[in-house]
Every structure is written in C-alpha cells, then in structure tokens.
Length: 299
Ligand code: CP
View 1 (tube, rainbow, N blue to C red):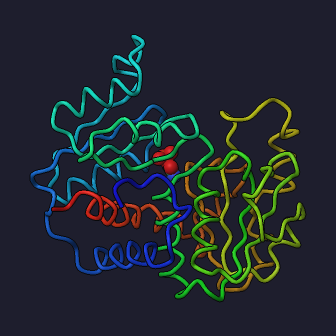
View 2: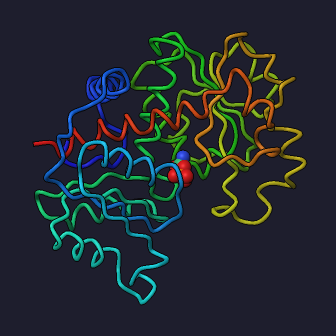
C-alpha cells in the first residue's frame, strides 16, 4: 500500500495483515520505527477521536507530529487544500492524515502528492473512513473471534455515514454471515452500498438474534431539512434502549463510532452498559493507526 484511502478493494489478506499487526501492538507494543519521520494531521473538518488517536499513534512510533486545523490556518484566507498539502510537504513531512468534507477530496490530494508521500484518509464526506472500519473489525474480532459466523446489525443514518461504508466493505470482505441494516427509508443510501444486506425499518425485528449492533450518529450537519421528523420520533423508532437490546443474542455487543447523540440514537444505560464496546473501539483506534502508519511509512 502507498496510501490508505478506502477499504474498498483491499483483499481479505491485506485486511487481516493490518488487523493482526494491530493486535500484536495491543499485546506487545511496538518499536519506535518512525523516529526519522514527520507526519501531519491535516483536518478540514472537526474531530476528537481520529485526530488525537493518530497523534498518539504517531508519537508512540517516535514520529514528529504536526497538527493542522483549517479554522486556525491560512485556509481561512482562501488557500486551497492542495497548496496547503504541498507547502507542508515542502517542510519535509512524509505522512498526511487527512479529513475533508468532500467525497474524494483525499484521493485528489493523493494524486498531487510527491512519490514518497503517504496519505491516510481520516474521513472524506460520506465516502470512507478506513481506519474506523479497521478499528471496528479489530474490536469485533477481539469480542467474538472470527467474523465468519456473525450476524451484524447497522442502525441509523447509513445515507450520510462514511463509517458505515467502510464497515460494510470490511464486513463483506471478512465474511460476516449476515449483515442487517435498519434505518428509515430517508436515511438509506442509493446504489450498491447496501448490496447483499437485509434491510428493514423495524428496529425491534432487526435486533432479533444479532451478535453485534453498530449504532450510527444522526449526521445533522450533512442532512437536508426534513429527513428526520423530530429527534423524539427518531429516538422512539430507532433509539437503542436497554429494553430493545434484550432482543439481541444475550452476549451481543454494542458499538458506536462516536461522537454519540445520547438520548437520540443510543441511551445512556446502553452506551455505558456492560455490552458496550464503545471505549474499547477508541482504545483500539491507537493500535490500528500505529499499524497503518507502520505499513505506509516504516523504513
Ligand atoms: N469516529 C470519529 O471519526 O470520531 P471523530 O469525528 O471525533 O474523529
């Protein structure tokens, strides 16, 4: 791999190699292989988990870490993302972790990069969030073992979710037994995104017998008016409550990529309850991102 832009098209072997390396980092740590390397978190959209866990991952590998935030940069004076990348690249930075609001923006920047530069997509529009997909798979695998026999349910705003798209690519490639999607029709994407999934709009029915429930945030910042009647209605129909969770397999796990809208798509007692892996996902994010940085940048 030269860049990591999407999980689409990666082979099962490539995914397993990254997951196995991340697991070995969780178990045994890692050498500081990037002490001679500078990386930059280049974020044109807000982030807490992804940006800080990439910073932590790069620091643990010994890299120098620069942090670019659009709101406090010359992007506010009209400098393009491409010029921003090329200028930071000219400072000797070899790795860029990029978040952008537009689908395809990170791939376009990768085209403009020098041959020795690696880009990692930290989320572009609705398109992809590959390291979130990887950390979700690592977390599921730790809890459930091989993904082959699992029934996984994804609930909520799939239409606007780059996380759902990356999870769907990974779950298919790793051979999940059944993928269910539950969402109102207004929040389902068009096209091939949900191919092969069992789709419904009745959350109680969709939860029956699943091994894992992946809740999604309502992405109100990407939403046209009227897609959801009201937050109360959404919670009534699609909110994961403790009572609803009893419909799953008794050892089912609950995941959410964050940030959560508590009381909208997920209740406090589920988010903070014994079946929740939400903070485990965050912890695994550091190891997954170390594995990705190593794969792209280590000598
Ligand atoms: N899961 C995720 O991408 O969170 P942030 O937006 O906080 O990075």
